[in-house]
Length: 173
Image (cartoon, rainbow, N blue to C red):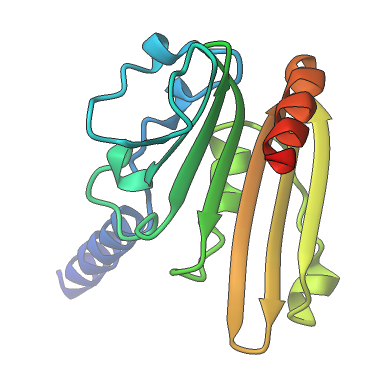
């Protein structure tokens, strides 16, 4: 009887721990090439640069897409639209050191980044790049002493020329 209680308690602890360390996000709707209206974004998000039909960036916390997740708190999203198409997605995290963006890249976007254990063990900056499904995926975890900055970017290869032209134009202003 006592053995069954121990097993039940261990199972319960295991289940609670998995729930505490999982994120519930609907990020699969954020895909390169989607138009602004397909994302069904609500009013009130910070839009910089005007009209999505031309060029605009949107900045907002990931909590907009994730509910009740301590793991994703503090992650910021930046969506860049050109001619009403989503051409670049940037995730940034400098709050919680749990490599949540690495997991989002591999679990949600199925990128297939492989950890460099040697760099991780030495607490060195990691960076990975993959070209897949006509997108460029870039992940970096910048580490310096007690500071870190985690970064994950997705850029559509077919929009690369338009994006570069837009960025050069913005830089010149």
